[in-house]
Length: 248
Ligand code: SF4
Image (cartoon, rainbow, N blue to C red; front, side, top):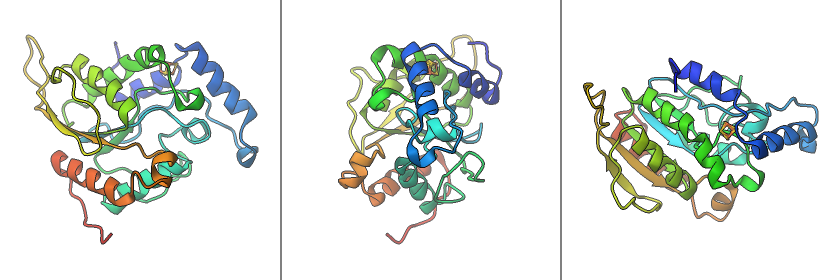
């Protein structure tokens, strides 16, 4: 994929129309809206990654939420899942604030970027395997562009895990075979990117599994704020990012 930098990649992603079902769904949701947001203009397009281009920690989710990121145009912004994620990032010192309401709310991430293996909101939060595969080249290119600074990754949920491992392999990292199963608390090392004929751009990365911050997981307390903070802190430590202790 001929893309210069992350800003260019993000711009290209927002214009993608490769998946007919998702294009129709995201645009239909943007037209019909939820009553609470009836007077807002929905984004209704693919949502690119969010965070600095030299991030050392990457968080990989699943896909934009219909009335969250598909409305606001920024990852995990404007929905309950994002409330939980950004509160935890702020608690451990990786975000400037603990809420995310709109793309222009001033929120900054410190050394962290957030992306997803599917960039368009899918019906019932369930992309098909074909849609996941169609979107993979965007993630592979994002990983290649982050490679010089990337040290650790947190993957939220089994879908993201299954989608991310092949992308890491395609981007050159060594992924164990058989591929490790997803688990909350899973941690593994992916060997340094292979770059035939070129010097290695960076070393290995640490990959962490964490339950997704979905309402189903957080309302049932399958994933608590403390569990999330624990994974984020461990990953930040692996990425060499400073964190702050949280009293909870
Ligand atoms: Fe393009 Fe990915 Fe959206 Fe499919 S899901 S239309 S590949 S951005």
